[in-house]
Image (cartoon, rainbow, N blue to C red; front, side):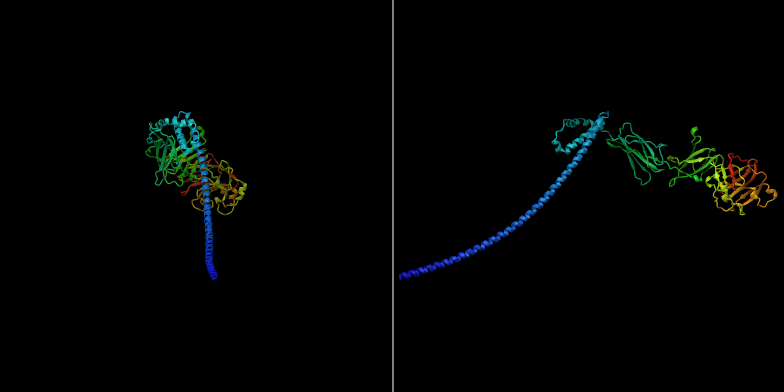
Length: 556
């Protein structure tokens, strides 16, 4: 029994132990599960932490790369800037060295002369420049071995600086004195200015200023050296200018002088060749002020010079104080002249006008070669010729129409400005005409225009044979006097060999005579207020010669 009881107790104890073990096994299993949960959580935390670390490392890497790139760019920029600064400094140092070398050469040249003040000026500038270079590049010179000569130069110059200041300390000069304007020192675009200074003043140069007295004109100036004369050019004609001058030294510019009024000369006039006229013993010269000239000159001056008598000494003649734009001057026959005109105002005379070349003829009449129609003129324009070939071109005068001199071979003389006499040698001319016409009469004018021409025409025998005339008159030499379209017949038993013509412009009396016998052929008073000119013509081949003898005797 006891044994069974023990067995039962043991069984119960074993059962309890087994239960205890089962419970402990369950607790161990729970612990293992909890441990496994912890390991899972730890693993998940480790993975998340690793991802965070990797992300932060990536960000740090990017920041580092960016910082490195910026640093590299900054280093490159600073490197480039330093290189450029070094190159600029090198160029500046090269220029400074050249400047110093130039000043050294100037100092050596000045030291060899007696101008010690100039030498001290250059030495001071050289010293100051060297000191500036020492201050600009202290690091460079601190590492260099400066020569004793340079150090001694910098030191020894200080002893002369006070003396230099005493020498160069000059007071500001007084105002110069402007001299009055010179009579001959001006043109239409310039004038000369002269001035003087006090003998106690030592100056280095002057400054001149000028301004036109017209409103709104800008003042101009010029910087000069030590001179007491200056020509101001580029000015307007016939204009008043105020001029000032001031002197300067190292101490500065002194006071300006009192203004002085200067005046430019007028512009030269223009000779009106087309309106001027001349004969063998005089000329009427006409001119006008320069176009665009605002003010009228006070007077004019006329100058004329004989070229043929230039080897005999001074031949220039002048007439001053002419109030109008025309003047008549006496000349000599067969002489050649150069004529000039000047304007005059308060500023004096202008420059000469363009020269007017004039050649006086031997007689009172000058033939205008440009007006010749079918006629030939000799070189001296004193022989008029109609050739057979030219006559054939104009051989149409034999009809019944009224004779017109404008259709015939003819040539005009220049306008007659005063009393005129001329002779013609007509021995080689059979059918010719001579006379006087208005200057402004056109070639195509009708022959019936009143008061336009006065002409004596010789009609040869073959031309007059067809006309109805008496036997007594047909045997004589026939002439026709034409008065602006109407005519009268004249018959002479002996034809003249030399015809003399005379015109008095004051009375307008026109006369034609036989120069050898002094027989009066015609005398009439021309009409009209215009200028008149001679006319010469040939109707058959022949010659007319303008004689050198101008004397024409009129019967009383």
